[in-house]
Length: 293
Ligand SMILES: C[S@@+](CC[C@H](N)C(=O)[O-])C[C@H]1O[C@@H](n2cnc3c(N)ncnc32)[C@H](O)[C@@H]1O
Image 1 (cartoon, helix red, strand yellow):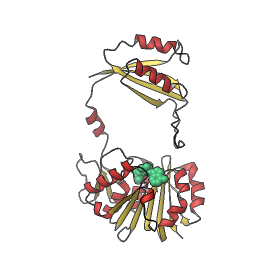
Image 2 (tube, protein in one colour):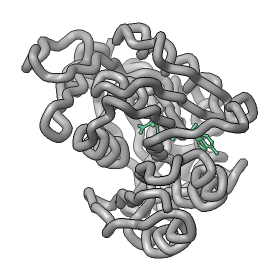
Image 3 (cartoon, rainbow, N blue to C red):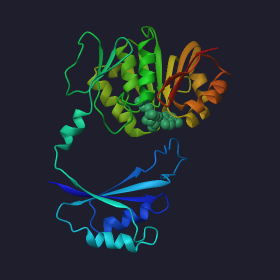
Image 4 (tube, helix red, strand yellow):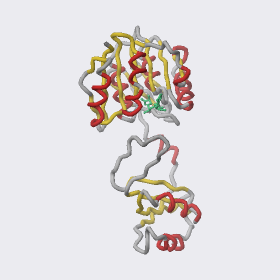
């Protein structure tokens, strides 16, 4: 079934209200989009900030007459008669097929591939993690995950116990196990992430070596040879004493999820417990690594 899409230029203060209005007028869905390339990386807990220039995208059934809707928008004080909008026909597609076409096997480092289950494995002799996009973060397409996967690929994990702090989909935990780690403990505040990690480990036949914990359930004396944490700069700073506690002396650490401008302060902070290396960069993102003193 084709649809009509209405795009309206708005702002952070009025986008939600206009979205509600469009839903009342028969929109099937509302999507909000950044109108001026203004990234929002780390909102405070409970806040969902919008962009200064926010584009509202409303989807309607194809036979809907949008003229009365446009008149209502013109009468909305924050938009007025000069409201900027665009009407587009959306052709019908096989959306599932389209979505699946976007995911391909990706190689990380020398040995490691992440492969969606519906694709052929490019190199059966490589270390292949089968992983499909799901509700928890972590498919390998995001630079912060890629930085961690490349780091894990470069380690000899054969005698290592690993902690994956903020495990999300379990992508790093499963990759570490497939790369030879003795055991992995995955920790996440989100129960959905725990479930996703369990399912992904089962699919990759390594769930017997993976233990999963909500933070309050993790053993107090949990310690590892290798700890990888792809979270965000704020939580990484707060978690630093705990993370330091969980890495054995001489153990290896990788932190990801921070922007270039956040790296220096975090490098100094973790320098209390770790001999830190020079940062590694990928697009806007930075990876910090170090060895526990
Ligand atoms: C960016 S995702 C990383 C997922 C996966 N490890 C990867 O590299 O793709 C961050 C994960 O950390 C979790 N998280 C955020 N704050 C946390 C905290 N304080 N303790 C444990 N997990 C946390 C989130 O729920 C999310 O699943």
